[in-house]
Amino acid sequence: MGLLLTSAEGASTTSIISMVLVYAAVIGVFYFLFMRPQRKEQKQKAQVLAALAVGDSVRTTGGFIGTVIDINDDMVIVEFGNNKNCRIPMVKEAIVEVEKPEDAVATTSDTSDSKKK
Image 1 (spheres, rainbow, N blue to C red):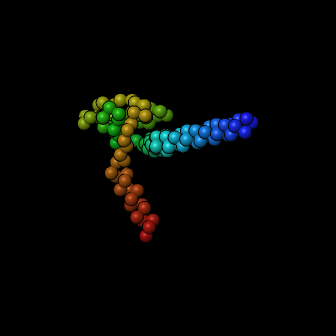
Image 2: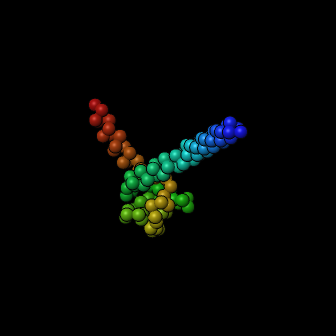
Image 3: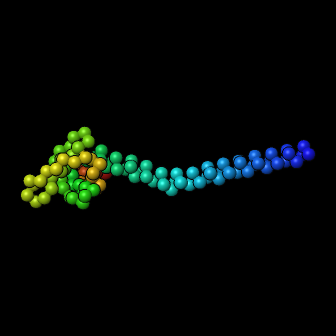
C-alpha cells in the first residue's frame, strides 16, 4: 500500500512541474509577441520626441500637419495653415510623425560628406 501512495505523489509532482513549465512558456511567448515590440516602439517614439526641434514639420494624432514654433517641457506650439495665424499649443504625445526640414537634412549630409573626405 505504501508503494502506491509514493508513486501517486511522484506523478502529481511531475504534472505540477509540467503545468508550471507550460504556463512559463506561454507567458514567454506573449512577452516576445506583444510586450517587447510595444516597448521598442515606445522607446523609438521617445527618441523622436526628444530630437524634436523648432522648424520641424509634424503630423498630429488628429491628422493636422504643421510646423513647430516653440517647445516647452511637455508642450509644443504648432503653427498650422498657409496664413500662419493658427498657432495651437499641444502635448508632445499628440505628435505622431516628425519630418526635419530639407535645409537641415542637406546641411547634415554636407557636413558628413566633408568629414568622409
